[in-house]
Each structure stands twice: as structure tokens, then as C-alpha cells.
Image 1 (cartoon, rainbow, N blue to C red):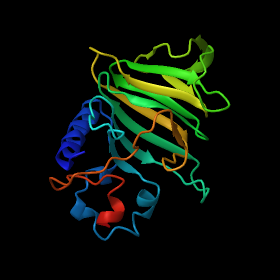
Image 2 (cartoon, one colour):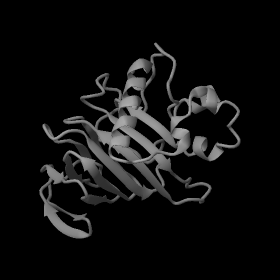
Image 3 (spheres, helix red, strand yellow):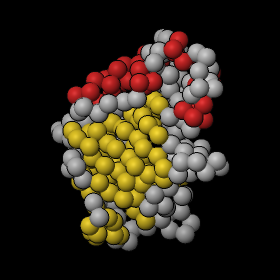
Image 4 (cartoon, rainbow, N blue to C red):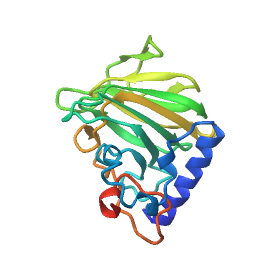
Length: 224
């Protein structure tokens, strides 16, 4: 992804968050210059990868396969400090987050506002393939039965609980606008806990055609 594209996506995201009165931490707005000299003071942010995370999953087409994420809080399995994570995300209309599951993480995915969030779900087989058996999931604590791969619509205010090894992909429903998505989960570990059904790139390589407006979680080591 080009840095200029990342900058534009972050600016649009900040406006969308503000329009929905979802306020980010103060450091979400820091410039790269503001981050200098903060590696000790902000070690918890840096080590646990809090902050801006813009990905096209290696597709080269962010608005087809991509996601805007901001990790607000997260812990570390090895330190056993916080055992929870919270994110805020944005899915555009028909912008797909590819099929994947988590080996260990249980998460609630919440439609916080905007459009309709579409979920497609599959249980996994013992050899990590897709099972086409029907499944039961919890929507706001209510158990419902769904067919494998059948679009499941989450309206604003609704949430779904995704357990380990439950394949899922999601996107904003066409014609309904972008979706403000919350995540409340166990510790997030993008290095070890994701299993994508098809090979993707979790963090994009950045073509530095412009200076960053804000740092991504993958920028901390480079800039600090």
C-alpha cells in the first residue's frame, strides 16, 4: 500500500469515528514527531501493538479486501498482564476481511453503528478445512442455528460471539454504508493466533511515497 493511501484512509476513519461520537485515545492523534523519545513511556502501546492498523491483506486493493483497525487496549500472553483486548474497526461496503479463525482467541464482534455487517461462518474440520455442517452461534447471548456460509446480518447494536477455530469472514452490506465495528476479546496476537483459509498478508508493505500522518503499529520499531 502507498503511504499516501494509508494517510487518506486514517483521516477518513477519524472523521467516521467522530461522526459516531467514538473517541480515540489522545495518542491516536500524535504525529510521528510527537512519538519521538516515547519508547519507554509508551512501551505498553508499542509492545502490545496498540494503535492504527490499516491492511489490504496483501490484495493490492484495499477497498475490495481490507480493513481499518485501531487497537485501543491489549495484553500479552507471555506477561500475563491484561488478558483482554478491545478494537474499533471500519468495514466498507463489500470490503472483505478474508476467511480465518483464531487458534485461541474468543471474541465478540459488535456492530456499533452505520451500515449492516455481514458475517459468513464455517466450523473447522480436524484438518482445518471448512465444514459445511450447520452451526449454532450466540447473538447477544441468544443461541441461533445458521447454515454454513449463509450470510448472517448484524444490525447496529447486535453482536456475535466467535469461538476459537470458528471460521469467519465479514464485510459491509452493499448499499447500507460503512460499518463501525467493535471487538471485545481475549488477548490479540496477530503473529501467532490467526489461521487464514487462503494465504494472505496480515500487515502490508508500505510504499513510502509520502510522510506518515500517524504511525501504524508496524511503524513503531522503525520510527522509535
